Length: 139
Image 1: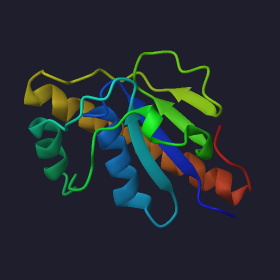
Image 2: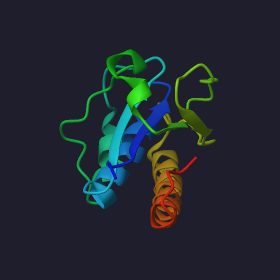
Image 3: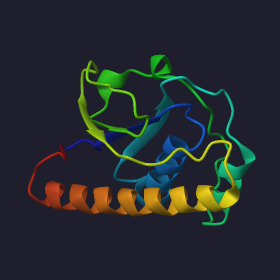
Image 4: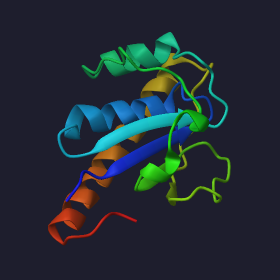
């Protein structure tokens, strides 16, 4: 069976989706393919995003802010949408995660959002492990 492919989407691909992608790559790179994109890509990753992930021992080196049009969205098994924008026209299963956007706010909020995303990613990976044991993809 091929590796499940996850796409994390937020508004600017600068904070939330970058964090989620990095957590998956850090914890399950050998088992899951993870990518991220933004509805309206910012074109950069804020230093606060880099800082709070570094606090968890995760580097964002090599990560770039990009839009959905930079990826073949149909090649993914599941899209995790944190953008707040409806993505119901995508050719793939979309699951909504409600996570506050920390962009432009204080470092405390970045840390809270990071920790919330870390928890959601852990739960998703646990769910995927159970699904894999049962021969199914997560929906």
